[in-house]
Image (cartoon, rainbow, N blue to C red; front, side, top):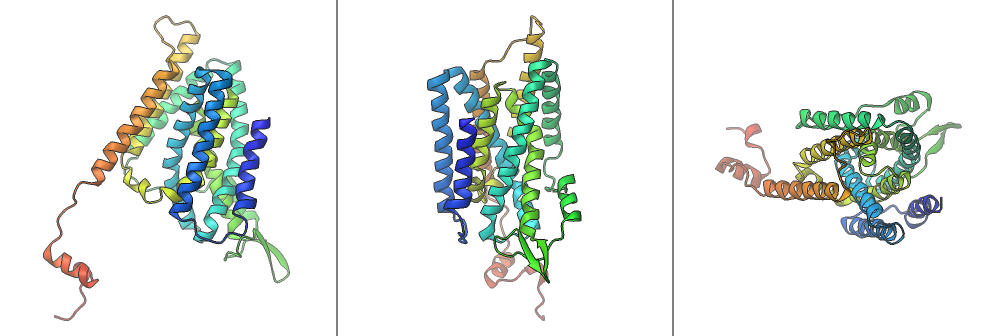
Length: 330
């Protein structure tokens, strides 16, 4: 309970104290500082787990944290689409993301509690989670190259239908008065969009982390620390995320691997002699090795020279015109 209180206290201090009434845009330098700060907290917590609970639980925590962090990078694409779709001013994006993450953290806590209870009561739930992760991995590979399409979930559709909303932002105000009538601003709607969309991502990530540890405490803290640094990661990797062209391939492999691990664990629990229980050190090696391979392959791919430009294209680029749409009189 103390850990949960401390996590929410850190998030509230970030939102209500450190960045309260801060209208500055979140620069790369600020994002790098706070990203380092939150990752440092996550590592210190893992070291504490190692000291007080042993290497096994520490390995499970770090495996879960790295997996959640990796999945969150892919989620950044969707967050970018949402913020662009709602035309959120850059000065408000930090507040929007932080509030959405608080919503997601509360709802994820509920999901984790339900999932942990189901796994402890019914071993067959491991089969469900395992096959779901494999299905998700296949789905990721099938939809490679498709544009991100943010579909409005039930909560967002309900909010937009029920709540009277203004068409313009009013600073950091969630509610304002127009003609004596109290209405909500688009800031509240976009917070609901970010928070509820992140919960949809939890449908994939929570079964994945349960494949690495069945300790609800570790599942929640790994999720919490991954979410706490997500805002800063958004601003830090805004440009780099587009260069990680093989990220989806790597995430699909990781989810598929954990899905198989869950199925093998279930078979092991049912005393199937040939089914091994995959150790946490092997899981960490596979996850870490996959992410390193993805990063190296993506960065190497981004350095490949593109098609050479023609002389006309180079001249048009220097003149600030498009040779394909040249409207000058001949």
